[in-house]
Length: 366
Image 1 (cartoon, helix red, strand yellow):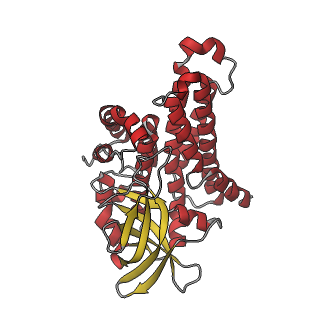
Image 2: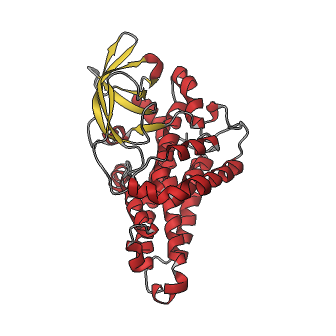
Image 3: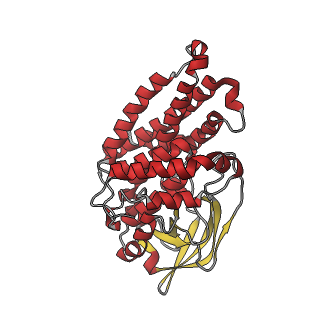
């Protein structure tokens, strides 16, 4: 991977990977649940994971909007792959925001380039900090690190020799949590395929079982999990918008493609493509503006981040329903993009933070 990727050059290179490597297997990913590891690594080689990671040395400065745009382009074609890319991007974001330079320096170059693939085990953490559920992982201090026990039901973009970021509660310390990077090869750690899904089956999703897993101090991202989440949360949420923006654009395009045959009757439907496109363009503009300052600490800034993330969920659902209704019976074909996009859009609305989670946090910020 070159060290001087501009945002435009990276997006062009990622587009080539999408057309050459991803488009031919999108239906196979959806129907057979294959994990597109080669595609993901090629996206990394094209510079797709590094623009929000300036400490990786691959770029000259922070460009979170470029990373969101890359994820959006991938999600237009296949959101299962787009979701895996979000996991990879977010794993890198954890390292970018690490308080411990040892873990950052050892891993960020590998994650930013796609040489090491990574996930994010923070769904439970974000729900716990929002008062929705309790932390599932518990860690005990031992010489040179921590022993961690517990399980996380679903963590994605994982496999042998992958890594992921997660947070565990410190045993015996009230409200003290620690952020860490986990190597899937650590003794006592197990990946288990516990469920099969109707969408995003090709996202490398596993249950993660911790049985006295030793986490050395060199893998600790931050000894203060609450501080870590405060400074990194806006970036995590903004990165997610790439999935929804891409799915929405593809749904609008599907609706437009029906016009030559069905435009005379589709005119009676709600959420017509031109109307949705104008709304999507406004949301994109808001996302990109917020992504210019991901370390802003003002309460109103984070409230705006949550609001735009909620808007992305809402327009994803509306555009996917519109694509199905515009397509008619053809949308029910097993290989039809419209029904796949409908399933993908529900995931945009349900992934943590889900719509109900976002509305809960926004209600408490009034």
